[in-house]
Image (cartoon, rainbow over all chains, first blue to last red; front, side, top):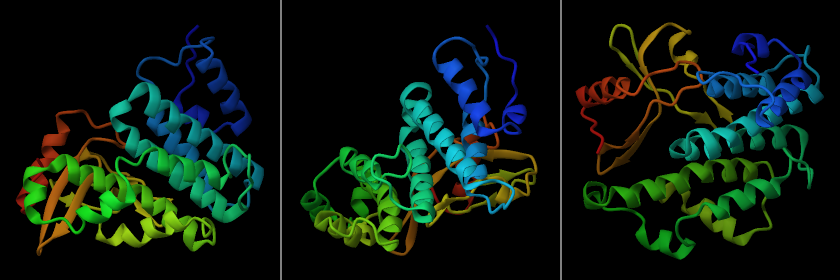
Length: 188
Length: 81
């Protein structure tokens, strides 16, 4: 069955309705159309989650953020794996924003700092010592080893999320994370 | 980054601390020739392009528009591998 809901229509609904629509799509009961703008829905849901509006309840904002994070994960794993780093950065930054606002709730699908911490370590392409030994990079590396530069930049992008959580008072217990945060400014 | 309809390159950070900045911020939502993300690093007094793509959650730029973005950066002296 083809669901003809447009992006604009979905973003005017409650998060519960959108969540229900997503579950139907992902279970194969409805088909949103090959050209459906998933990135637009993720970004729209993210905007609803972090907008300053007394009209929306905190519960609605958390639900919109949860929707956005799920769609980013879907795009990263299924639709556009080559863009996974970008989508995962968007999702984790949104998590950090929501955790800063509503607190760390271990076990919560959105607000668990541990999810961000595990994501950071799982995606590291090298150890802390290896990264420390590579930085600061000489200009020749930019010209001849762009893959290394990209790996280090990806770490720096991930560290933006870690740094934000750190500034909010989370992750202080992890000595290794503290060392990564200290290295951040030396990364390309 | 976006390249607006007059060909002007507009660069904004993807994130400010914990908030993602959407492309319409750079354009007031106006149409564009290209939009995407560009990774740029500063080293030895110069900027070096690391990566450029057409990812945008507002615009739906096609693959060929990446060249428009690359060309706009090249005019500023920034090239991508």
